[in-house]
Image 1 (spheres, helix red, strand yellow):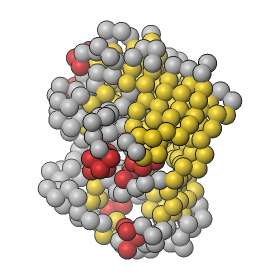
Image 2: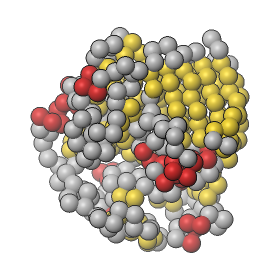
Image 3: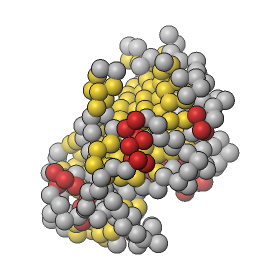
Length: 336
């Protein structure tokens, strides 16, 4: 099995190339440590939305809708407000229509490469971003932290870890999401109408006109149940912020927490596993006609810091000074 890990140039920027067995991936430190490309070369699977024609600046303008971006903070904050236990912060309004802050800033920063190497049967890359007073956003949010990313590509797919460490003397609100952009279709000659998706959803969270939670659970309808039966076609119709609790179910006799995308014609699947820190799903497809969809796992609910709910329900939590937290995910393909 060929295993390589090396620095390359991507549009004149430093990037990381990993190969292991049938898989290859390109990671972009210049774009928030985004996996901007991942392929299964045996089965002609292209996992994530990618557009080679875009410039670096164009990618940065829409960094959350390409590749595999990590968002800190995820989703929306009502009126830009983030209420922590020891302070209240006001973020810039990005969602003008809803008057909300949106997606944070970490996925657009240029990160540092820490290590690129082959370790046993894996191609490994580590990157980081140190957030402190040198960042232009620090005047708005003066809570320093360190973000660390680990990518391990092997014949079992891509293993991903993301760690946040509070390096300040304040409480650090903690919320993480991956705005995962899956191609639909994801096979070379696939048909969008042959694409199906299964997601381990639980209770549904209704949203108001500003796409903020009303905090009233509602029963799953026929549309929602398509996620549980694996019959959801995730493109060619509008999926606009379907929001649910994230659960664990048995798949092939084993516990599974995540999403499974299937190409009916070939039987090829993309499996996307997340750990128990991810408590919610937000599912969205940008109008349904752009050839991609986003099963987004999140550790906190939309607007979690401002919801009138305990942290056990909203997912809101804080890291004490010096404390760290890590989330883990895996994405791979198989042919049934």
